[in-house]
Length: 599
Image (cartoon, rainbow, N blue to C red; front, side, top):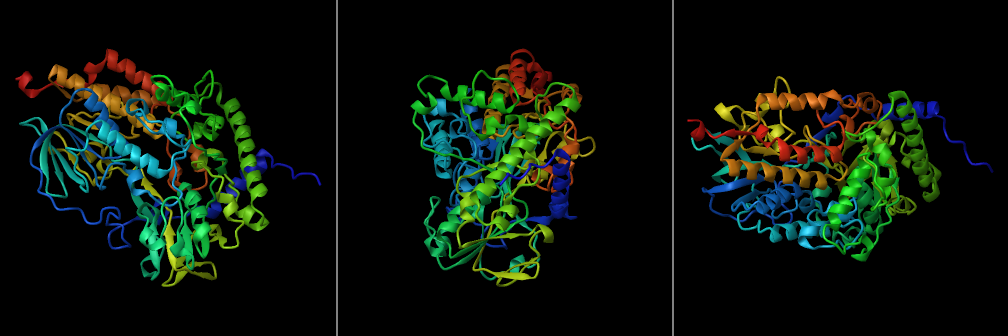
């Protein structure tokens, strides 16, 4: 029997369009809501319980860092390397780790190779145990970094910063928190993350469910039993529903399938799931026998996934082999040639990859109807790719049922006893939300952490009319000594910890220069305008691509992602080279004399 013919480009475009329309909802991103204390146990830290009481802090530090994930840790470490004494990190969790502190669900791993994802390996002398590290190894490394750079003594855990206010008289920031703290800091670095606010679907009746509910970022092992490696024995007689089939669902569903009485997987859009091939590693496997081996490896990875040429591929995995298809995933990427030729070649490569991934489903999943529902019908960069060797086999088990919700645009409602899709109610004992986080909602940009600069102006208000104005995405006129880390107006990558480390190096260099020159870190309006013009000059035209994509967080749940001066247009590798040259030649653009010197 001849194998089925692969669809033509025209047929693929038509199929992608049909599948997209099945899933687009008129409420867009409003289909999600936050996880508040009134729903489930999201307002309580499951790992430390209620925070221990302490006296409010009223002192002064050199640098306050908001956020204790890898961004804040890297900022603290790199600033420490500049000889700064008092560095205080403020963190909502009970310890360092950020996303990796909260996410401890069964099966959790990083989808980027650990030897390029985990930062400061050269500095700490650590070689990861696995090619793709489990969450607990990552969390332990966060603590290792904090200990290595002595970041624990001044840290404030189980604490959320509530306001930043510039005091003109002292030329310092006043930082307040939800624990009654009010202290001064010469510099403030914010690293509140792009994946820090858990979200839930806004499903009617969600509060009425009488069974057990949990979000994967607040896993309840007291209910499920076991731990991150499995053994969820308390679910053996339970009917478990899982909402969400993104990167988290792809990891947690196989673990639930091993132990739960029955697992119902509620899927709106299937992920693309490529080969993972995880395995233990040794120092010899990654040539960790010379100084700077980790930096060399991660630079090689970034070069390849940024569209640059490399003599060889040190990581050699699904990311690097499909690097050319990341062009539309990232807001900045290097590409050459005329647009028509590029897009034609890109579409052909995209089709080949997606046909390969759809064929993988057929090869593994025995039931034809289930296999068809699991096939991803969209272009590769429409959703973040996932990788697993366990996900598809889980659907061959008798205790796993896939419920496709595309035709109903998601779950219709939740009752006291279960979930309704179409004409069917699926009775459940436990409902798990693998629905991830609100992307890009950092505290300082959302207004949850108001930052008031000169004359009491709030940062959000300063940007309200003409949009964000920064120099390289870090600093803004009117907000002296405030350095922002994140993805705004700089460059990004699938390996975001590398991005954060380069940002931390830059932030530390700014602080060191300001200290050496007794100056304030504050760019001029002219420098901001010049940077904005640089971003706009060669901004890639990705708006049409995302408008045609299946809905997800990359395109505002189907509403598209507008072009604009949001990122450096030539990729992260080139951006880091630009920053390095700027630090050597043009640092004065970001500094101005202190008021005492001007007087």
